Amino acid sequence: MVFRAPKAAPASRLPEDRRGHVVGRWCNGCNQTFPLQRGVHSGDAIAGRDHVASTCPYEGWRFEAGASWWESAVEVLPPPAPAPATAAG
Image (cartoon, rainbow, N blue to C red):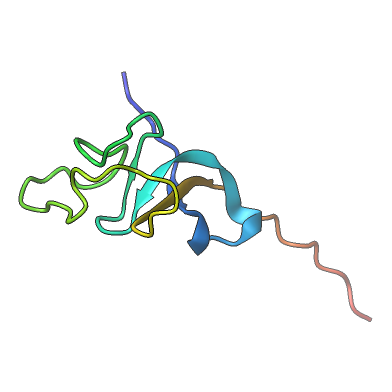
């Protein structure tokens, strides 16, 4: 069985037309996405590094509303289809 996590990014770094639904919490310290069910920055992220030597300065902090060190992670939607070319002339 393969676990496939959606490609996620912080909402502030994507244009509105590329933002999908919220899939987790993005840590601005370690650039990893953590599950919405987890209230504390700890353990393995949904996607990202899993290396003990690369600890995050926010490890152990609570995901409290309004904190500046994390933001919502949203699914990255595919780019819109290009407009059809029109014949000039």
